[in-house]
Image (cartoon, rainbow, N blue to C red; front, top):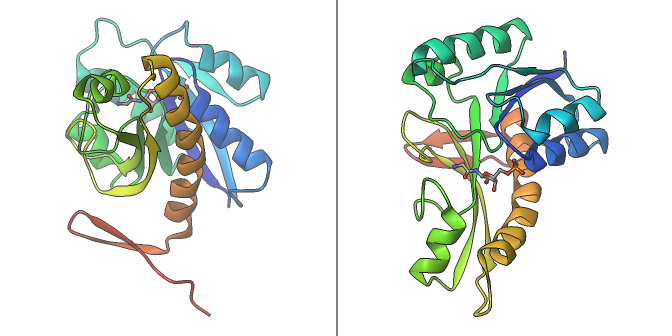
Length: 205
Ligand code: GAR
């Protein structure tokens, strides 16, 4: 049985594309993107899904209470047999009910070295704060915003002449790389969680 992944996105979808490319290139053996869900019908990520013949669906969030919306999304993910949910620029906080529906099976990518700069415009926050290094984080999702045990991080330098765009682009290249690494670790099952720490286990001989 392939590992069926569901991707939730709201926009461009480059992290989704990176995962899809990793699967196509054999970097995530046994993985398959079973469904893409967007809360916005104008999300360019939907076009990327169609180009790759990956099933995609719009579930508009406008006007719905959080739990009511999450119920619709959970139902579609379960119907598609999804076992791992990857948030890829999905700009909504998940309800505790959603988190409990996929325990330790929801991943998020965030463009900062968490716990620094959670929330919106993390790259701008980093620039304005004046940090000399920033980066990105893949973590397990809990009920809190951009929180949960960390699976992977990567560091990039912040240059004196950086703009929001140049720093975001440098971070994004690392996002694409570490999201695949994190998904591979989760699908391998070769880890244990101690408190907030995710410990990768050595491969058994
Ligand atoms: C990415 O930079 C991702 O880290 C960020 O949104 C962008 C989505 O780009 N996510 C967050 O800020 C979550 N708090 P993409 O649609 O091209 O993958």
